[in-house]
Length: 221
Image (cartoon, rainbow, N blue to C red):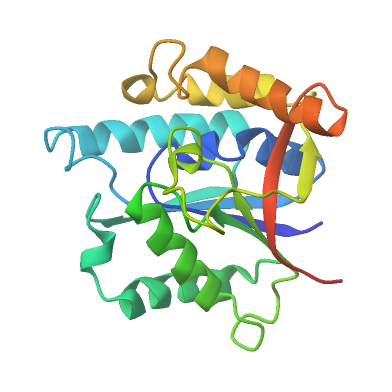
């Protein structure tokens, strides 16, 4: 059994990015935890949405089977206004407390700047001598953010790790359905149909029916 941790910027990112993969970890007997750094609401909604999104996240976590989900309540869309050291130390504390062996986080070049801050903080927090328990560090694809990254050389999402999620994709869709305020109508990338089609697309790339892709940031036995 492995201890798995997903480090996400906003409520729903933990499902959009790799919800079916986390469900697969759970089914394999792994201990899967999530931490959400930003409250995810105040930049777009009224203050009452913060508690609504937390409720959505907790219901969604139960569908996937997370052992825990923790909310750090940092400011939405303003993580780049915080000292990076502060964000990194928060992540370091969580990684050390869990002794996680497998960690998932955002692609650093996503269009959403909060994603980039979380990715950088996670990368720093998981440096080998600071977090010796970490064997694998992967970056996930976040629909409506990763594909809209700034089109500069080296910023494209280039996965080299693919997880067959044919058996757990429906759990991801059911978990995402708990995030009623965040769902959009098709063909928006955050519609349930588009999420299923995205998994089918990546499956077609590597010869599967439904796949979630990842960039390998670190991997060792």
